[in-house]
Image (cartoon, rainbow, N blue to C red; front, side, top):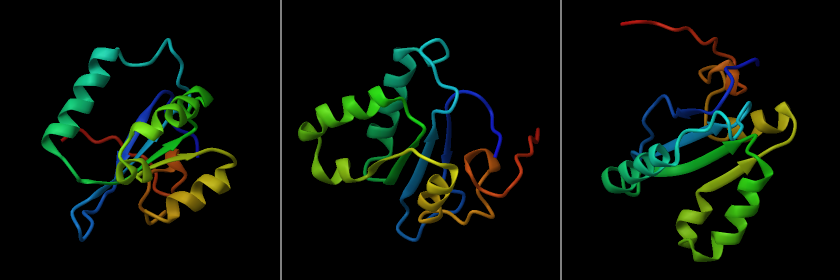
Amino acid sequence: GGGRPGVSAYPSPEPSPDGKAVVVMDFRGYSMFNSPPMRASKASLAILQNHYPERLSKFVLLNSPALFLVFFRAISPFIDPVTRSKVQFVSGSAATQRETLAEHFDLEELEESLGGRKPYVYQVD
């Protein structure tokens, strides 16, 4: 589908039986000019590590810059193997991305901008 520019993250809409989350981060439209400040990224990581340990089932990165994968491969020998196995880089065609997302989500319930079939509706509640 279309989508909003920049990075968007999407947690799984329904809690999994084991209480773990699948997080999708789409980098379509990402550039160094619209990236969040490093301070914000570090703070987000600290919150996840300190308050939600072992809650991540899978972290799917769509359309990430090639440099991210190069960096991940360089540091991966120093990352715990269990944690490393949770990170999945997905590139290629929209069909390839949908196939990967279908392993974790019902595409009828996943937002169109990430390859699902559910229209994005902004609601102020």
